[in-house]
Length: 529
Image 1 (cartoon, rainbow, N blue to C red):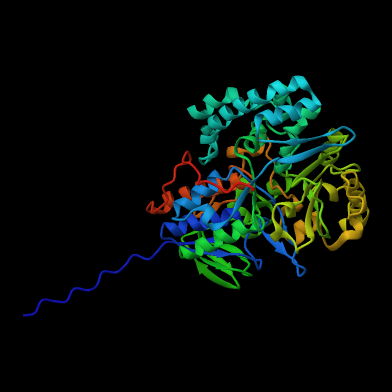
Image 2: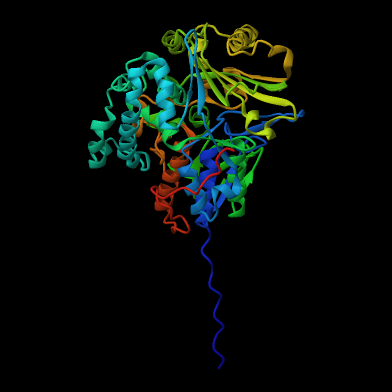
């Protein structure tokens, strides 16, 4: 009698994860999960990947970053690329920028911030010779502060009991949680303009240095310790590289495919509603803007900690007024990055916090064409201007209508640019695009037009921020600036590692090729020539 033929072994079905949004957090998560063998599908409502981290190209050949214009602390994203089998410098070209930026103090002077300690001390001495002695102690203290707080930034913070963890308790003397950035800097620098030179970076969080927790002195420290990097072709090229690598690893990215809602069976996420049909998934990762997307994606009854009222009354960052200008000719005398700080900077900040459009705004100007000829046609320049303004929720309360306000405010901004030596700018404009808080909200789906997401005050950090594993439901995870650890590209990428780790643990995923520790060295990056 013949032996029966054994049936072929059936392969276990692959874990399916749906990611809503192809911003930097969603793309990093897609890479990490696909490298573990997960069946990843990314749903993006726009025609391109990157979210706010995209680069726009005009018919005339100008290139503009929509949001971030430089790269800070590339270690994290370099480790992510390496962990999935490639190297950052094989996918994009990064060039170190030095001087980091030119700081223009209205009615005072200007300094060129440098990562070279001796040069930076000389620049500080232009403002206050005594304060030059504070630079190296500031760097040393913040190096220790980052080392102390790094374990907190690298791990989920799901419960208030995490405050009792020994690693956090040990870090408290350095973090000084009840102090502000400005007060902390006063321990090293007596001159208010010097303190401003090391605190304006809180704008990356959309916050005032006079209110921002003292932890965030590490922002300027990171610039001096690890450099500021320009990505050839614009910051959006790293989003394109991440999407390319994710696809090579087997992830699918569906553009122009908005998600209607997350589907649930009780409190368990079962997939997505897309185009009127159910798409099953074992887990869902939300990378869409939290304030904009959460009320429509998850029923209010399933999110008691973040119901509609809590989301509406949460504290949000400022917004930004943007000008993207294609210019005939060049401005070689301009730095790659220029920050103009108004003479009434503290008053300017109070206006933003009160929801008032500033009358003497500070601004940031990006002039990448002096380093990267791919950003504009030959003989032309691509200028990017960012001006902090109130978000839509705060400004609407005071009757600001950006459809009517834009011409007046644009004229004011052009007058401010003339103080930087750009008095002939108007006649040289060959392409112009304006983005106001209204466009951030309506065209780019940014809640309240708050460009930097939820505010980073102490009551909206760590476990008080929406969790990477979203509380109240099963199978829903968050990534992006609206969740822990917070906004800013390096932090968002670290958040993707946290979210991926939680999801992998919950679904029993194998480690795969994900192996780079946080302390590992980033690949060497190409410096500016």
